[in-house]
Amino acid sequence: MSTLVPDYLNVDYTTIISRIKTQLAASDTFKDFNYEGANFTILMELLAYIGEMNIYLLNKIAQNVHIETADIYEAVNRNARQMGYEPKGPVSSRGTVTVSVSGVTPNHEYQIAAYTQLESSEEYDSATIKFANTTLYSETPTGVGAFTLDMIVKQGVVTQLTGYTGGDLVDNELVLPANYAYDNDIDDDYPSLDLFINNSKWARISDFYDDLSILQDVQDVYQFVYDRYRRSKIVFNSSRNVPTADDSIRLTVLLSIGANGAVGANTITGLPTQFLYDVTGAAWVDNSLISVTNASVTTGQADAEEIDTIKSNAKSGLHAQFRNVTVSDYISNLESRSDVTVAQAWGEQDIAPSGNVNEFNKVYLSVIPTEWGRSTVHTADTWWNTDWNVSAATLTPSAYDTDWETTLKAYIAPRKMMSAYEVFSLPELVYFSFEFGVRLKRLASLVLVTADIENKLDYYFRAANQNFNSIINFNDIIEYLLDLTNVSPTDNFKNLSGIRNLNLRDMDVSAVVSELNSNNDYPQYVESSIEYTGENQLRKIQLGYNQFPMLQSSSVVINEES
Image (cartoon, rainbow, N blue to C red; front, side):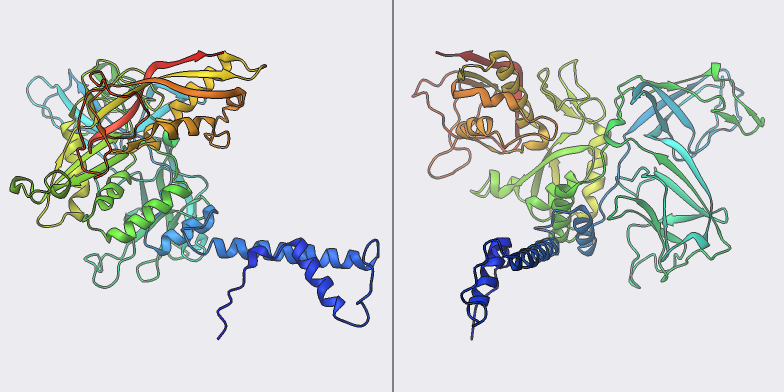
């Protein structure tokens, strides 16, 4: 039996022409034919061109059949859905606005309607960044007629989509005119959209469950998805109710700007003309009696998921099967949140392999938030940067925000194994500083080369590009800097081509770290870099389970050497 497997990748333009010539040479008519300059050669070249194009398309199709090798968004999105994962569209930032009211009539009911628009003092693309609450808030003050309430708001311009009917559905789907805010968690009390059929609100679900579902008797349901063509759409299913041609469809949605929609503390202060309604007195409250502000930065914003993120989340979700058992299960579950950039998990076998019973069934978790601050992880510093991925001032995490830690615990609770319990450990940020010696080519500029070295190290140490418990190999860092093909999406670091030779002359670390040894134990040995008096060599070091690498701001020194 033949075990030959066709190798389509080797069948290119040149190979096809060669095979045609070989085939023709075997016939009596063409065995002595001279193809150079002959008209017949044009037909051969055309056939080879068509053949190569078909082979290219065949390989492209084969490549995109499987999610591991797919490189087209449409194929990755489709494969992820087949694995049970729903790719996310743009996610709006979220925050808490404190509403303070005084001088109103006691014992009257006051309401803030859902989807009331608020404005911040910050802008994106020359437009004010707006927010809205997505649920109704109600309060009945007593005493002197003053009250304070905390209101959850999401970034987005409130948009009413009307005029649709069931007759507009195509295959039970309604494609929307823009990409609207997706939800990080559709099971909480703060939706990003509401859908009404004939003024009756329908429920959004993540999947159309089978007959075993507890929702089997709930028929008025829909899905809000981000499809393979990067479009937001509403999906109904014939196993449940589907709007008829005479049914009206109305949606209230948030037009989101995704990752660009975060604002700083005390910036959401703009009220609409009609904000607080006196239900009992049937009148709008004068805005002079009301003040609003956000004590913390808004968080959780994200652009629509791209190919690499979808691949990672889809495979992790498939392996986890909606439960957290392994380290990768916890990491993928937490990193699926837009307010978490990187997550880490470790347990008793990592820190107590000798069998410390106090560590049994304990799972330690540590996370790097998308934004540092009072809404996520408090820092001992008075400073934090809303775009902290660009290395800036040193941060020292001091505590998880209580509400955020509670939110994270509630988020992972549905996947909890019965015998395990989770403990959140603060991340320890390990800052690195470097001193390089560089020799330049004759026409290279030291200023431009220095700037590109700093920028490329900034990109290397961005949170999204790093992990907890990572191995730091300084030789790899040098190779990374000198590799001109390794670039960022926004910078090709072209001035690094002017480097003739690059050497790492000195480095320092802000924390106690461990060096790898032949046994690969953890911890290997711990010794401060300041106290180390041995041979000065570029050795691999291992960060601890809760240690995360960062670049010390303004600490990259580049000296030109002759």
